Image (cartoon, rainbow, N blue to C red; front, side):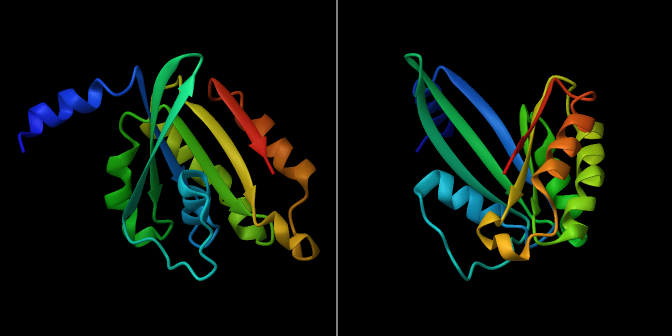
Length: 163
C-alpha cells in the first residue's frame, strides 16, 4: 500500500480531526475509559499501559464527520520521555484520577502543569474522577473535583469536571 494514498483516503473520511490525550497517574483507569468509549468494553483485569495506546472514534456531529484520535498514555514516570512526544498537536486533554486514591487526585495539578507547558493555550481540558462505582471507598468528593477544575480553568480555554 502507498502511505500517501492511505493518508489522502483517510483525510477524505472526516471533516475534522481532533487529537485528544488521556493523562494521569498509573492505575486510575485511563485505558478502561478509552475502551469503554471506543468499543463499550470494560476489562476488569487490565494491565498497566506501556508507553502509549491509541483509539479512534468516528462521530457525526451536525452533519460533519469528526474523527477523534485518543492517545492513552502510561502514567509511570519511567515512560515520561516517550509519552511527552504525544502532547504535540493536542487540542483536548482528559486528566484522570481515581476517586478512591487521594494521591492520584493531588497529582492532577502536576499533570495539568505538565500539559500546559507542552500544548497551545487553546486546548480543552476535562478532569475526570474515575472509579465512581466504588462509592463506599471514595476519598475525593465531587465538590473537591469541581473546585479543582474551576481552579485550572483560568489557565486554559475550557476546563470541566466530570464524575
